[in-house]
Length: 349
Image (tube, rainbow, N blue to C red; front, side, top):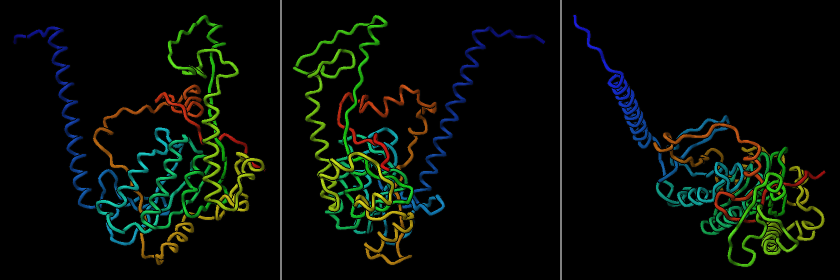
């Protein structure tokens, strides 16, 4: 028998081809499975353009919606407003838009329950979501309630003020009515390690509050009016929506403190404390003239796409520096600076 010796180069090429086509085959198989799964799902559930209609139950399980009962739409607002992975303004707007289109067109949505657990976040996103909810309620004339299970602070509370009623669990915390901007400066550290900064700019005040240049007593002058206007807007929204609370109380007595739910109810920030989710839902159903057992509660879950499956996620925990940036440095990725409605206040005694 004659043995044929294979060169190292040929062996490498052969191994590469085997591995390459194996990966391609696996990807094609996964794609076909996901495609078939998606086609099967479309026959079983009523889906909107970009959301699946899901029925959550009290045990945390979720089922696809298939019935034609009157519906209460539950919108989950959990996390930091404006942050990736938190509460997204475009997603809230999409939910509100698609709640009146496709299989939900007409008058199928009889009420909306906003499920809130948020410390707040970006000022622009918070105000925009507040107005989006207000406009929706005005246009379609349906009741919209907020149920708080956890934290409803700062921008989260501003959004809740756009709903007809606010109910909370006994352990929930409400408040932090204020606004802030936070900047940092590293010029001292730069000098210690011998790093210099040279910035080219045009326009008076363009580099004000830059972290890489020394500040002076006038550096913040262009930002103070923005912060003041944002704070006054927050105060106006709260006093207009919560008539038991006065502007003087908010500025001089309550400040930006956070209150436990019973105290928040006592001073007029919310309408009821000690509620369970099903109790808040029942109160909303009554406001919408829905009899018990005659309706279903649905939520809208973003559809999964094949691109999401291929996307590589960073599962490592954030470093302390990254965590600091996420919480205290608003919108650094976009390069914009805006007031923050984010909980950063002590709990009231």
